[in-house]
Length: 117
Image 1 (cartoon, helix red, strand yellow):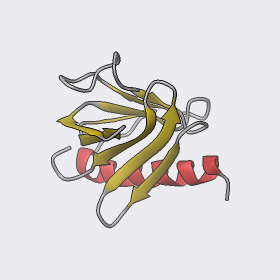
Image 2: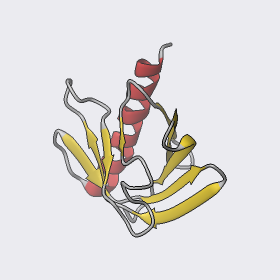
Image 3: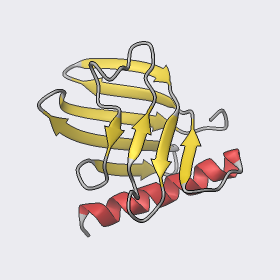
Image 4: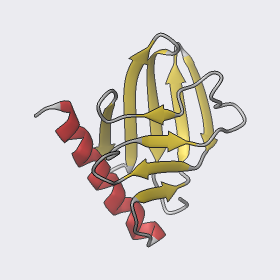
């Protein structure tokens, strides 16, 4: 199975769980998970607004709003299903993005999905 199919499956599972709590539907899934951002031995944690695009052209594009410690100056706030790897742990309700870039090195972003989103 290729990356884009795995990523689409992860997005679909995430969408189902978020919609159970948020009761919202549309072309952009918007929610506020607790975010854990890990890179180069550092870890930042804060609750951020996240938007996941669900239209065919932008399907799987993820954007996060800036926070106090997670900002566009120091972090990637946008992700693409064609570049990063997505996974969703349905049991623990954790969506994970992994990638690598010159700006961040290897990084991992976790969205903790619970009833408070």
